[in-house]
Length: 116
Length: 112
Image (tube, rainbow over all chains, first blue to last red; front, side, top):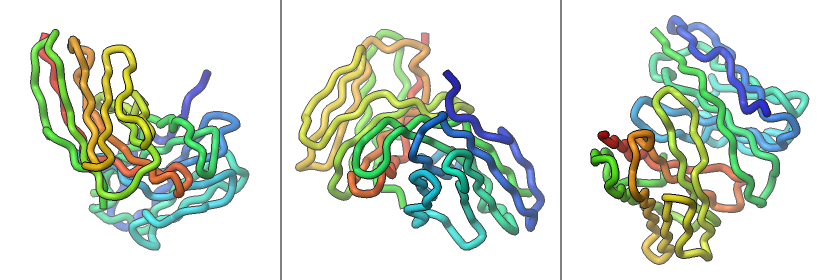
């Protein structure tokens, strides 16, 4: 079956531009996560949705970062006024359960953002 | 603010040898997971070990967990060139909706 998909796969932005990154989770998955992975580092948590509710946004680095999942399916991560330090791979993951019950997270291929 | 530390940062071995990677973490966990990431691709879940477990096996993978030392190890036996990848441990505190805290990873290179 289809896995998690992300678009675009690559994005080059000039400093100061706004970007929008899309995530299509596995159909029916309740939970959706965004992570940021800098070059040579492990992923770092950004934010988490359970259905359409954003339950944790503690990892968003600044108020320039905004995420939404209005219908509890597709999610968009928006970065306003991009800075060079925003250059990273942005990973999306989904899982079929929410709350305290573990369920494997399935990751998309990521969007590589380069800010010039 | 990554929680996990992994050791070594890079490991190069010959095909057929065993590879051991270590992970340490800082706070209480519900479970610890290991992921593999091939260059330019997403993360693939390998194995999960719960906080009340000490050892778990899956195929050529063996994971141990020592909660008193807040550490885990991943052993890959009889390595293959296809095992070349970055390996990450990730912890789940269990009360944060499944949020994972990743380590910095070990880059494994298996030479044929």
